[in-house]
Length: 286
Image (cartoon, rainbow, N blue to C red):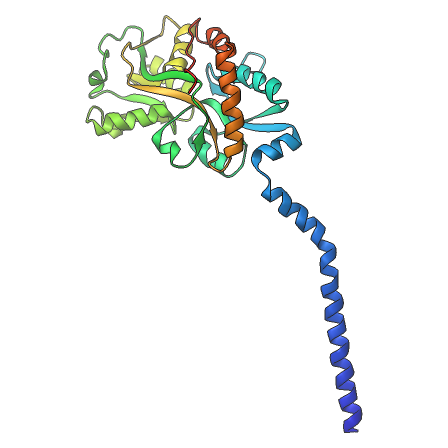
């Protein structure tokens, strides 16, 4: 009886061993899919863009005149025209994805889109978390006030005043510098999700000035010259560039090369004159 029991035990162990081996043998069948996923993970963003033929682009679609909606709801602006030229030269399509500007760098790094093209200012804070293409527009941060305001002519005149800007923008970075300089109090900064809201409050007298890119300020002034004006003295120099993830070195190389070509052949200057009231605000090639 003991021998029979022992035999059954041996057979049971052998059976379980074969079953385990059989289950293990099924795993290689899953490998191709796993290897494909792994292969995609190893490809660069530029390689994946080329395969899909599409580059996704984040933007604030209310940021005039860089990228905004016209009366038909279609995207227009400097960056949109520049994007169309990028499509031709790179042989791809751009898919524009509206995003909350205050969280734009986080959305880029979480791969909600491939790049940011939206008059994105190069700032030290942003450079800590993302990379940039070469600059393509030489702008500046300035102030817009109501047409009848003759009290604010320099940044020192902002003392005791309430200023508006967009949350997460280079305008907000400029406001923080004004706080450090002791010119304004942090409690006097009103942050808005979008600049149109800030300019609306300026018109209503709820704020004294809007700290904003002069390109954007110029667009609002051109639409309502009897309501707004730009203070002549800019606060800081400002450059626009395409925002990228730090690891996307090959994509940066491709975009830098293409931007340089567009600068050198006059394409970007023509787009600038169209959207910036005849002014050529294109940065010099690096």
